[in-house]
Image (tube, rainbow, N blue to C red; front, side):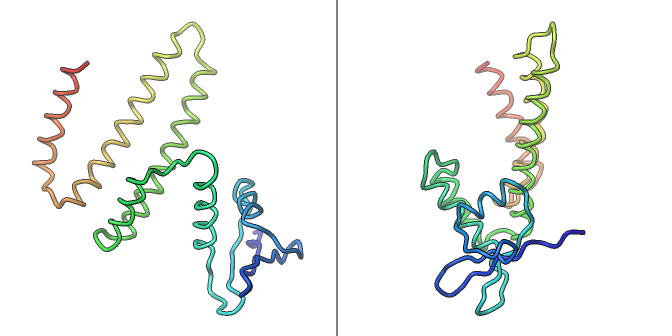
Amino acid sequence: MELARVIKKYPNRRLYDTEESRYITLADVRELVLNKVDFVVIDKKSTEDITRTILLQVISEQEQQGEAIMSQDFLSQVIRSYGKVVPGFMANYLEQSMKLFMVQQQNLRGQVKRVVGVDPIEAVADAAQKNFNRWKSLQDEVLRRFTGTPRESHDEENAKLTSDQKKVS
């Protein structure tokens, strides 16, 4: 089993890759993530694991460049969720949502490639609907937990939304 690469953060804010014996930037950290290299960032002074903090800095840098993928509303909701929900539940929800999104994207690409003689738009729409229904179910559960709404009243509300959506279609 391969050990995670150790990156040390010095008090001067510089990151030092101990495997390559050189200073690196946040862009280099991003490349490690993109290349699926396991690593850990350790604060040189406190010996604390600060990997999450560095990853958040990478995300922040990415959000400032080019097209942002996290809206202001989304970021505000994340901030509001601190102290209101069980942190493990929220972290798991966000992680599972991202995994579901990635699987959905891979499935859609695969289906488009495999579909021969069938309308690819229809095949993709069916797959997307199935994945959306799984995601919606998970999201409904999160909303129910946020609001403290009993499952029965939430189910009634969803049934009303579904019938309203059918009217629009």
